[in-house]
Image 1 (tube, rainbow, N blue to C red):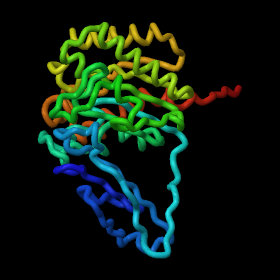
Image 2 (cartoon, one colour):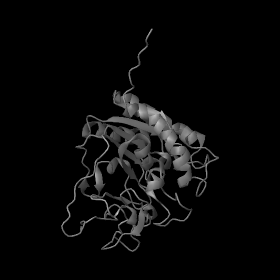
Image 3 (cartoon, rainbow, N blue to C red):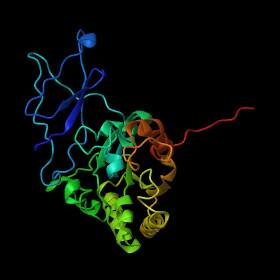
Image 4 (tube, helix red, strand yellow):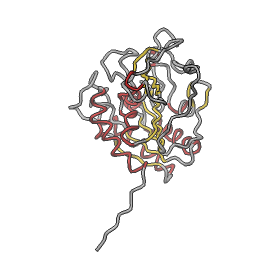
Length: 299
């Protein structure tokens, strides 16, 4: 797990989560209010950890087993019927959602907008975000050494393939701000988006894919208007060339605004994600996850 293991949020019976740092062994306390229940639930969320170490060649966390009290058994908890997979960068990962300090304790996945879609849309959500990553650009060494999304979308980490057997109902791709910030060319980004989108169409043949054009964070200086225009052109050209009815493009610019509290002027704090970004994202994505209901008029 390295020198600075990630933090875990462990919630038993839906009670407030116990925040612990990953270790060889972690003991979970049974909440007194629900201890008399005949059955219990336990949810473990891996909060995004130390981004300064290599997170691609060696996974930052591995769950090796769950030890239960003697005489008890485990079962898979009930799940939402809809499934969403979100690919993104620092905004998706939850970078600095607690405070503007790059530590394992201050970048918390369960306070980012992507994770919030679970409750907002009533769906299981897989959050795949790496700070510093681009659609065509790798994250810097001090940002986890993650390759570009073209080389990672179909892997859990180096050498371990990602399974798309569950065919998520909706795959959201919200990335490209780091490429745009670095003034990547339209051709470079267009080719990378084409690679990822064609790969997802093939790997998950029943999934609807939404490309959300990233706002580039809350700051209007991290990604300038001119740089964002190149990103938009690259996405639209790639999607137009693929011409699949399963791919849609939406603009996420309205999900953030300068009035939202931030950690560093770019990354929204958890309160911004929960109160503003997530509701806007859920409203935009809901039509692609749920078919519109039928309406009737009676006279």
